[in-house]
Every structure is written in structure tokens, then in C-alpha cells.
Length: 446
Image (cartoon, rainbow, N blue to C red; front, side):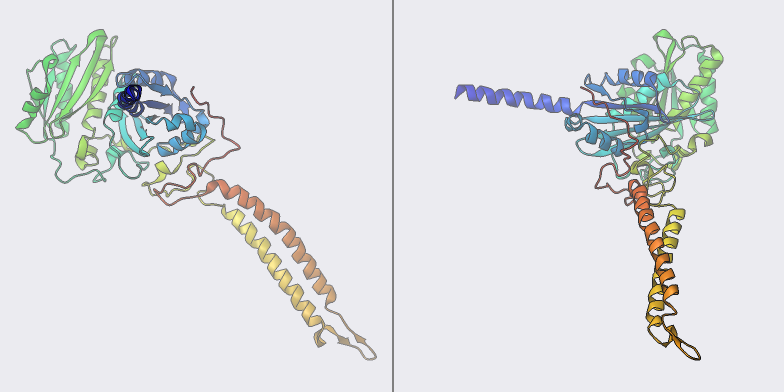
């Protein structure tokens, strides 16, 4: 009896710890530029995520499998590595899209147990992704915002009056500026930030607070008198690094960017600080996401739609298409419909020819046994005069049928991978756009 009690007690003590480990496990799908994995960024993101948990598994799927996001990637993992997926945890992926003067970033976090996905779009202007991207990813992993559906091709920070907008969100009109004493080129940095804030009708307020000793209580006190005000802190760090952070008084949240500028001159430092400040000013805090206040601060080039991923093996699945007006047909396929117009035209012509010729043959055959099929001459009768024409029409119908059947079978096989589902719906087959012939094998981690 005593041994059973000890066994039960040990199980009860082990259960919370195993549950905690399961929920805190991170499966890193990868960081990709289009359809190309970026191992350097993966390494930096993984290093940052180790602050949250030591249980991190890097999946590194084949590039042909990178045309998915969120639930579609989770479906691949569940199908190919059911043992790994069954252990639960958080699946994390990042898509980086370089552009002219700006780099757009889409981060997604999928809860394997709940089956829901959180998305976050950011942009980077004149900053280093190696230092800026890891904090963005860890921020979403720590504070995911799960909602129904998935974002469209337009970046979330550019969507005015979106689903996350709230009428009660205060407009930011004042930002307190705190610069550390050991910051290089402090005067030039201060002037740059002031000019940027004034250009978007935000009043910069200088603060002489010590950035190294700022607490949450200090930040809350600074923003308590002005609803919606924020605190921008620029702090010099060891090794030439600079941390730029923005505290939002309404939500009590902080977003940060780290700049690695050990060998930067003054001009290069200002460019990187400007990029970090612009990204923070456009960041959505809580219920302000999607509001026009955030969208108005974004440069136009950062609002260009994300490209549709065409990675060869699996095209971009419903996650990206839902909510974008594209429906949930296959994105990146030669045709979004089940079959091309030429295929439908060919089937129509062949089956139409078969129907017309068969009907003609039957009509001629029936008429042949009436007076119409007999020609009366001066001295004799000539029956079955319509039989040659009926036979010719019958032969044509057989040829049309012989061509129509295999053409239809081939067309059906060709359109089978292009099944579509209702927009935003979860397909019964978790990988409706899977192409078994072109998908490379998935290497499951041990």
C-alpha cells in the first residue's frame, strides 16, 4: 500500500513538469528569404529563443516545402513526423522579403495542441536582420495573439481599420525620449529622432531619467499623465551595440530593436537608428493593431503586398490566401481553377462531337427503314440508301468516344491536386495541395 502511494505521489509530481516542458517546446520551421533557407538567421533566432526555453528543435525542411505558412506547415509536420507533432509545442516560422530600401518580415507561431496560428508582420529599414529579427520572433513567441483566419498578402501594419482596430485606442501625440549617457553621437541621434517624430505630428519630450535604472513603475509614471503617450529609450550597450526600445503606456508593453554597430561611423549609426525607430513607431501594441494611427507611419514601399511563394513542391496553402480575396484555391499553380479553359474546351468539343455524330447515326438508321431510305427507280427499288451515311456517322462517334474518354481521364488526374476549399476553412485533407510526385522526403529530427 505504501509503495502505491509513493508511486502515485511521484506521478503527480512529474505531471506538471512534463506538461510545462511540452507546452514550452519550440519547433523552429526556419527562416527563409522567399524559398531559400537562411541558416545564419536561423542560428541567431535559435540563440535568442534559448532565453525562453532550452527545448528547441530545428526542423530545416527541404526548400520545396517552404511554400506554406502556419497551419499548412503544421499539416506537413503532422503527416510526415506524427511522433514529433504529437509531443506538442509551438511551431515557429519566418518569411523575409527584401525590397527596395525596406525588408518586409512575416512571423508566424502555430500552437500544435490548440491548432491555432498567430501572425505578426514587421518591416526593417536600414537595419541588420541578424540583430533585429531575433527579438521580433521571441516577442511573438512570448505574447502570441491568436485570431480567426490568416492575414492576406497586404502587410498587417498597413491595414487601416482592420479586425484588430479599436475605436477606443488613444492616438499617440507625445513620446518621451530617453538617451543613455554612454551613447555615441548622442546629439546627432537626438536630433534625428526629434525630426522624425515631428514629421508625423508627435511631440518629442526630453527626459533626464537614467536609462540603466528605468523600471516599469518609472515608465508608467512618465506616461500616466498623457493617455496613449510612449517612451522611446536609446541605450548604448557593450561591444558597440545600441538598443532602441519603445514603451507603450496604454498597453504597458515594450518592443525593442538591437543594433550591432561596433565598427559603424556616425552616418551609418544614424541610418540604423532611423530604421529601428521607424520600425518601432509602426509596431502595433495590443488593440491598436490595424488602426490608422499605426498605418500612417509606415513608408509606402513597406506596404507593398507580400509575394506569393512558389517553391515547387507545395504551393502556398490556404493560410496566406484566406482573407486576401484570393479564395483558397491553389496559389502559385498555372491556373487557380480545377482545370484550364483549354482543357474544358477540348473536353466539350470531343464529347459534343460524340453526341452529335451518335445522334446523327441513330437518326439516319431509323430513317433508313422508312420510305426515306428507299429510292424508287423506273423499273426497280433501291432500299437501305441511308445505311452508308449512318455507318459513317457511327464510325465518327466511335472515334470521338475513343478520344474523349482518355482525354477526360487525363484532365481529371491533372486537376486533382488543385482541389479547393472554402476561404478560411480547414480542409478535410490537411494537405489538399500536396504533390506526391514532386515533394522531397521530410527528414524528421530524432
